Length: 143
Image (tube, rainbow, N blue to C red):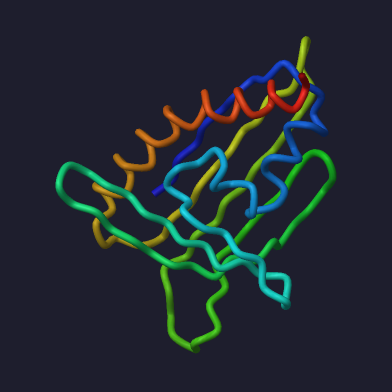
């Protein structure tokens, strides 16, 4: 599953990048991320929770930042330590300057098949809701 989304914000690229470069900030604007706690080894324990009607699904992932180019690009990938094979998750965020602000392009690759249609629908719905939350937080930082 590949999901892509874009957002244009009236701020400097550095300001917008500050919201996506560290997973700790994601629960503030992305409701599906209920927790993102940094570990001493540079990874994050990320709890995801999605709800569709009466059904809810939770997932905990160990994510690592595999690329960081300030203030333009960051990549996070799933990296579990239990020795088992896990479905890959890769989150990429790219920020670039545009007239009057900055554009954020995010991409999520999920390589699992279990509940994929449900997960994709939940993620797409959450992306729509998160845009306004992130724009509000960016505006509050600027004000």
